[in-house]
Image (tube, rainbow, N blue to C red; front, top):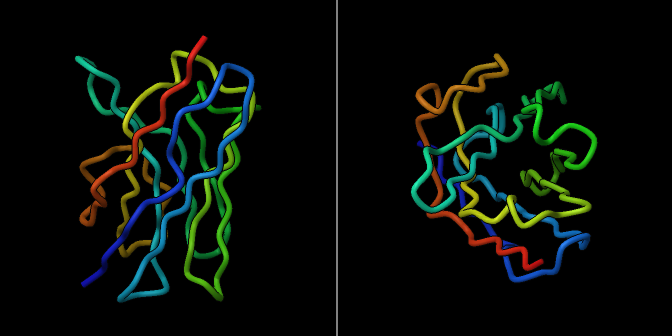
Length: 121
């Protein structure tokens, strides 16, 4: 059993940066992904990292977002730079117990409650 919990959301202005954290418990060899869901839109993939440090990004995240992990704290971070109003969404952390870099939400078994990120123009 894996439990994940997000933190770090908030209200920022366009161009600002924000770092989200996802703390996992129960397993260490897990893949962790970030997804987001804006109002009236489907949940979409943002980035993922496996326990070996391999990463995969959505096109919308490349160049602005960076995913990383601290193995000691069993925490995965999503550093978001140059935020835009269209990044406004609830951001979810999710985990699975495989080494593959999945971008599909269906591959993730464990989900957090989400953290709101609001970017004002």
